[in-house]
Amino acid sequence: MTRKEQKELRKKQIQMKALELFVRKGYAETKISDIAGELNMSMGLLFHYYESKEQLYLELVQFGVWGTKANDRIPEEDPLQYFTAYLKGIFEAAAENPWIFQMFVLMSQARRAGTPEVVRQKALSVDQISRSAEIVAKGQEMGQIREGDPLTLSNAFWCSVQGIMEEHMLTPQIPLPDPEWVVDILRKHAEA
Image (cartoon, rainbow, N blue to C red; front, top):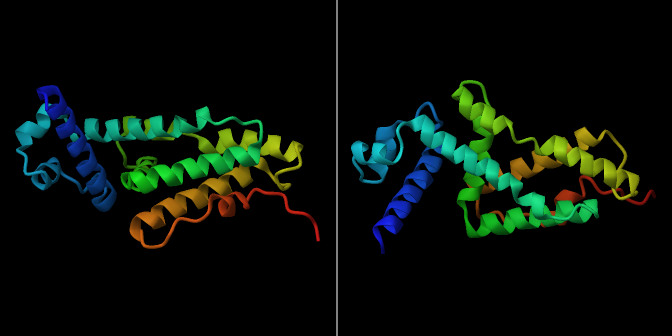
């Protein structure tokens, strides 16, 4: 392994440990010494990689923001298929990379008051609900998605996804649901 590869591996280890601790203890309660101690690393070495805890937190949140862009590659012509494909992709990626469940929690925590403002603003820049509301409205026009306020439907969908991701992080023995079950929140059903 080259020196550059070793450095990247160490940086990834710092990020994953910080993610775990920020989610478990909260940003305010996690100290740089906690992260360094968990990694059997001196604080001086950790500061070689990150100037501050806030810089590390911001980098994690920026990574979370980047992760939300995965849906940009999914075609939106069929709204229900879009939501199904998006969820399937999230669930499959998280099954292979369990830290993704933690990232959902971190991004939620980062939006709250008390978070360093630069980090909070970065987290608030993600607006899946408003963006998805446009796709919901398109699905309503096509007769695929139930009637109702598109923003409210989008919010119900994404709150369900958030809850599933958070709960799975806590209880991974419970299998993830079929994406179609969650998409049924949006689906227009035939009237009886």
